[in-house]
Length: 117
Length: 112
Image: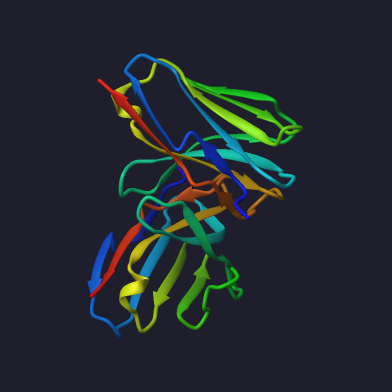
């Protein structure tokens, strides 16, 4: 149980375009979802926390207009990177926690590798 | 400031040996968690230890927590080549649905 999926796993886009990444909890209701980014050989940096039905809370230094987060249901959150630039190239990972998945444990998706040309 | 910091940053051992990884943190916590990440993949939750616990076991894993020293250790016994991965500690300041602060990670290489 407690499986989280992400789609797509890899995406390559041109500079200036927008990219949407989906995060789904497959077998539990995720009241909270988290979005992280990870640069090569570095740690995970939390970007934002989203609760179902409410606006996301962004970490300091993360542009909310550039990284749009929607958590419309208990099983789906999306991250849209708007007007992507090469410096946005990174590994984006979501995690989910909530009912049925263990209250204190975050379950991570497999990540999405974004490359902006 | 970095909440969780692991040491060593890289560890190379022979299959069958034990691997010990340490993590230190700065502020008070509700729980500390260890995760594993294979190259280019997502994170796998290994074990969670709460602030009122001192030691926890799960299979070949043993985790200790010393809140007075603000440190934790992860011991992998009888290591296998398949244990090769990056290991991260992460701390949560509050309980349910709390955000995690990750350390920089330790790269473990287990030589067959």
